[in-house]
Length: 360
Image (tube, rainbow, N blue to C red; front, top):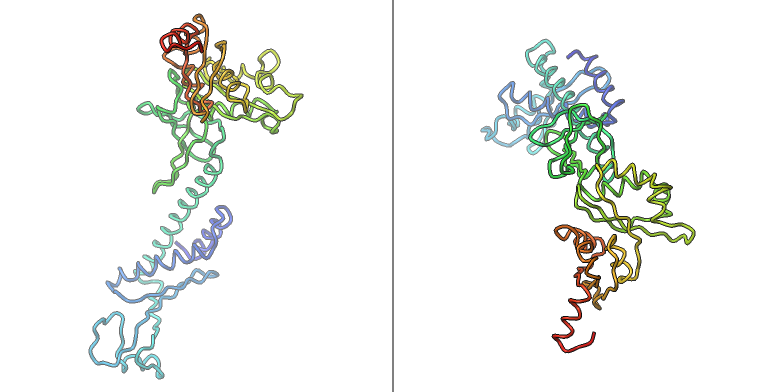
């Protein structure tokens, strides 16, 4: 690499990748010191200085002066006599420096140019990876739209303007099929630094994905007028989301549904027809549990004093709806409210009371 090209390369990285010149220069100097020791099979204490204006470098050997004629570490020590040839004032214990810069035309000159090029390229890659990591790390919790690049072993690799991410099988909505070049919306779930660059993990099965879809579709949520309090989901089947507002003039559930279902329709379409229950949040656990068990109609709810469990009483016709297929509805309601919910019919309660000899 010519001197001019080296300096230009450094300036280009500084301008485009926002890496301080000092970091680049220090990396090149360290690499050249290692290259020098390898080239000359030396264990010397080497310091390399790079001229940031011309691209010239200087190699300095640093050795300690000892008061002995025998050197234990010849590459790192001078006898007093040797030291005085370089510095007449040298004394035992001093560090004496010697310029050992090889000629530019030497084989080391070519090695130095190659080493500098490798360092610049490596720093360029590191800068790219660092910028991609910072960009996506700052977007964790957001939804981005990308293009499907390929599908391998069930994992979907999604291409964004700056980087590639993976949508693992477990983070996909069951039944979804993607093909190369499909446009896809995903939730940025996690970004991991790795030696090969940042690993960006996407999700479409997370309940947070649904929360962000509502945030995009409902201005009242984006503006903070309506707040999403909690969500629970069984991807591909059903999701429950609880909402609240401090503005008495605003209906939080209606805001999410939209006029004639205009807002929720787009979300249902994005989720491939997944059922969505929008639940009105309440500080009253009885009311909250009742709302969370929708679409079932609940007759009454008894909440334990510690608010960790509750008993919901329903009529026989509402029992299967309250429990849901394979317990799905009550499970999602429990997760949504943070309260373990048990479902009983009126008759079951009467039978229990009769067996216990009580009326209630």
